[in-house]
Amino acid sequence: MERKNFIFLIENRIMIRYVLALTTLCFVFFSCSKDDSSSDEPEVLSNDKEIISFTLTLNNESVQGTIDENSKTINFNVVGATINALVPQITFSESATIFPLATSSQDFNNPVRYTITAENGSTNSYFVVVENRAVSEDNKISAFAMDLTGTVIEADIDQETKLITLNTGTFDIASIVPTISIPEYATISPGLEVQQDFNKPVSYTVTAENGDEATYRVVVNAPTIDRIATTFRTNPALLYTGSELIIEGFFLNMERPNATLYLTDGNDKYPLEIDEVFAYDAGQNRQINTLYAIVPDNVPTYDAYYISYEDDYFNITTSSTENLVDVVAEDVPNPTATNQSSYGFSDKLIITGENLPDMIAIPANGSIYLIESNNNYDLEVNDARTELKLTLDKDYLFYGSREEPKRIDMLGPNRRLGKPIEVQFH
Image 1: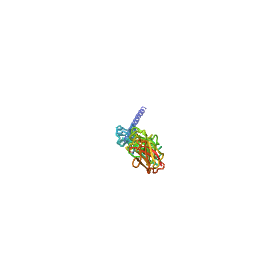
Image 2 (image 1 turned 120 degrees about the vertical axis):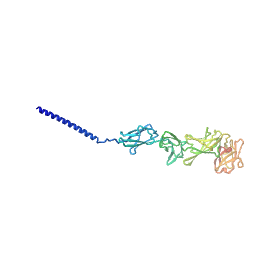
Image 3 (image 1 turned 90 degrees about the vertical axis):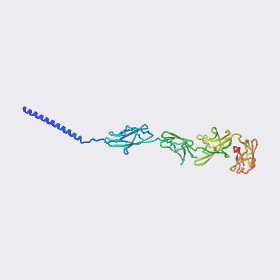
């Protein structure tokens, strides 16, 4: 019995040792098998090498560039930015590296190349291109036109004075939307679609992209004084107070609010009394006005008056020495009455008044006849110069005279024009 138990114990020990040995052998086998498998598989490195985002601070704002993977460019379009020393903000593939470093400052006035190197050593290059347009300073009106019922009229533009002028004649210009050309990046006030009344000057302010402003003044049908004259063309025009002055020009519209013609010496001005106004079509959308004005009695003697025109919108003054007016206010010829109401051939014309001159002018058949005491005429003036006599015995003084009034002008030295008197011829 004891021998059987002893044999059983030995067999159990042998079995236990066998199991332990087998377990150890399996562990070693599997350990070796695992080590052999790991050494056969190579390590895989990343191929990622992309720039995901690229941001620059431009004009104090963060601006993200547009990435074009096809052309490998990163594009910016900015205006007036300082780009010679910028540090970008770059997001790129996690396992990659970048050169130049994202933290380094760059001059973007020229394209900058960034190279991304992947973990596996492959590379990808991007070019950062910053289109930095200069801020526009242009604030000029380059063209101005009006379409008036199908007729397009272009304006003249003086860029130095910022004056825009055009003539539209008799077209209605009370509610017009003009066509105006301004720079691409500029703005204009009033706006391009705003209707305007161009019977008066209109101002437009053009603001350049950089903020610079230019104000233009649009003047349509601007009044101008072309010439002045008297019955007898002299330079300067020689007049007494109370005589008639002829003023001719374009668009001298006396119906405009507070329209007035003046004689001016540069300091003081004296309103002229408008007697008659005639208007003519001069073509090219212009209107000629001829005005007959009377020099008031209160105008002082002065040999170099200019003419000025003013209304609520315009103020112009002649500047040419060819349009001077010489006025005398002393000893003014002043005819006051005649001896008859009507005159025929051979009648005696007697004019009474003050400061009557030695010469008069009588119009007949489109001509003006200068009459003074000589072999042709028996004109006489008394010593007090209060009475003038003339025998009307010349046929040509009655050409076309069929009960028509005639204005007889009084002429002083050098044919200075004085006050007229009207008589009836038959």
